Image (cartoon, rainbow, N blue to C red; front, side, top):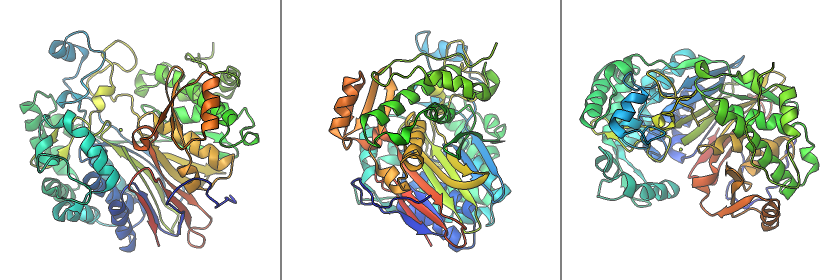
Length: 536
């Protein structure tokens, strides 16, 4: 790809060119991954080290109680890993109705009854055992050091930390762990997390066994029981991440790969399948026609995803049916270039997060995402080991349907890594975090790179929109006012937002420039976070 490296957007970031690369949303985590590469490790080792460090330096987004997903190229083929959590054995609709009444549509947003069994630590172990080079304990050393010695608080992380304080300060273990002076840390202030260092050391020494079958699992069961939850050590012992085959969709001669359901990655594939029916490159890149078309394609995708996607065993249609070319062509015909529409789901049946990416000169590339879901997840933090627990259980429904809660079931999931290939060979490892912004970000940035030849950093920097529901969209304040006004005239209910972190996600990108031992990679890191792409 011959990119134009003249960046038309306001940014302090420049592309990074290197043969070994780590790109994350926090510089210390990027350096943690780089240390493993310098030590002789591979991209998987670097990804695990960076992910462990991220639980310490950006706890607003993830923690040792997170879920995760991964797509990786091992040098020969593509692999997917689903490490999303499963419901405790006690969870049924009746369990929640008995505790909370009949009026709730979902499990609670916060507290122990929002927590499924966390999968992130299991993903680290599984990735290391199958593809890593270095001893597992070595991978956690940078995170342990950061947690014990502490680190100075970064600007964007601090803003979100402070914003969450009022809602979460009364939840079990939160103040003890994250409000060390009775308040959020200030920018540039030293924060230490020694309880998490203790957990990381034990996880490293036992290759995760302490977390899923030992001392940490017992502590989490005790903590859950004390605070009205139902998680047990047996729930942890029963947990296993699942290696899966990524699903894909061709677009402009490339193939975008996503993790199959229970995640929402298929939304990006559907939207691109619809856009494939249009001459997107013939439209002005930041003009109203291009943006309107992409918004409408994304709305059509979400209409189907929200109706049909859940745990695969519960789905009534297959991903193949949802991605059928003739079906997507019929959906594309619904788009009216003159007005915004509120689409319903079609009939395809015939008859809250951190993202990081790594790559090494041997050709291994890793696309990895890890999340506590909403800011700080459940708000519950087991104090002895600093386990900040996600709130993915809130994604279940209590009503009959494909996403209704059940013991051992996985909820509809928002976090999705992405991977791009061409003719069966790796091209780019990338992702854009941020709830339902993720498939929207996958699509918007990919269109910029493939249709408009923008380099990864420019595509990352460019102003974004975010579809919410109905005719409602948010747009970043950096978007051209002429385009914003024209979208409003077409019927979009536009809200211009200044807080890019909250509404428009943040991406990390590594594009393979050629032979990794010769040309290496082009990497980008989103200016909407504190992050950094580093390499050598």
